[in-house]
Length: 272
Length: 286
Image (cartoon, rainbow over all chains, first blue to last red; front, side, top):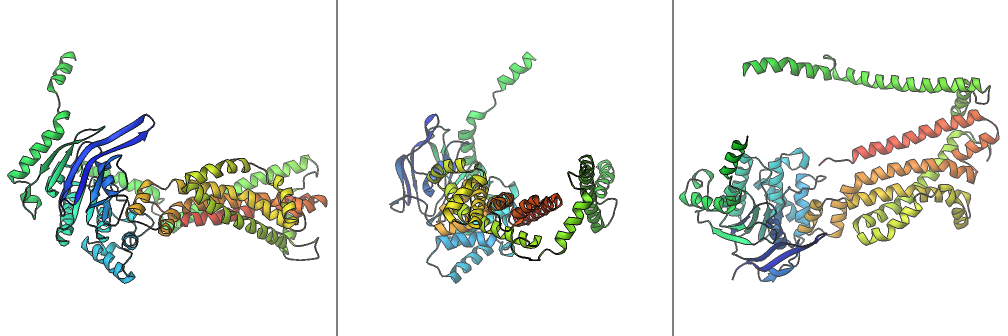
């Protein structure tokens, strides 16, 4: 039995111009401990699907079933890393994580909560920066705080909404490793669902990649399995034939519509 | 590469030294800044005094001269706390009494305005219910409220507090509602995703985000309260800076009236500065 299941899901919004169908006919089966990426062009509804799993948006048709129970709203079994870090600017790095832990893990004693915060801050190497405010740290550090916050509530599912989109390539690469490290530390038991528009990132991290069609009323175009061995490492993984093959397939799936038609150039030149 | 270095170095040093006034120590630069601002302020007041002097000469004593006024002003502030019975008290006592009423009305107004503002900002139904009332009552002159206050409290002093309450609460109410309504979805989503309790949402998201807006509202409100007190006390009589202005006018002492105006202005400025200081303290940048 699959762990996270989406059945015939459709999500529509009421807008000024009438009903807008964002995604439709979405069916997914995700095993426990898998890393799954969803990729597609902007506006294809990938974040909408993630929000439905998070319980922040509700399907207008079909349903999301997590561990045998239908998703009815947000819960501490799902940790979210938002697109723009979403740290509270008036709280320190430490407090940002502590307040989340305090809210999500109500059964722990105060001492246990503090221990949890410290453990995760150390894991992402931010213990020295715990007294700083979000505006005082770099984008990469903010994202590490956000990841630590999501992991710290010890959720079964991690939902990442374009988590590394705003970062430079080097920071991004080191955070990929850091994410996989955290995943390993929890014995790869956590299911990770990630929205991205970065093909390389998707291949490097995922077991499966879901490619979306363009919206409106976007559907799943194809599901690509990635059989790269773990642990993966940046330098070797990218040279493996499997990596190159998957990359080729994804490129042709995503880029066919944006290929430059050279004939147009010649026409313009002739006209000029 | 070499060329660009030789080109940029003089430019950057020139840019840096312009800020530092050609290498003066930093505190001296600061002293000059303050002194400069002071000179302009003095210049403005000299200009005002000159116009005043000319006006009083032209009206041949209809308007008291600056000198005569400053003598009276000095008499007033020299011994501000004397008390020769109910109709003759020092300016300090008058001010203290006015400030007491202003604080009472302002505090009551804020205690009402902040919670209602939070409700209006957080809840669309509350906004629909209260907003029309706010729009109708906000532009009403404080003096129009006075009879209502008299009927309700049967005391002129309480009525004054009432009109300060009812006219000074609007800026705080509107600013609080605006602050709460403009909490970004990102912050709300964090609270939702991690299951913040109502109390945690209030203390860790809503209040910290809205606080700068609320303090700006309070600053506007205290300004209104101080504006209203003079009119209120003119009607209520008894004691207070507003009553003092009216009493001085009846005693035909324009010198005292003008002195009172200066004092009212100075106190108003101090109140505003106080809140602007608090405002800066609570403003965070994201």
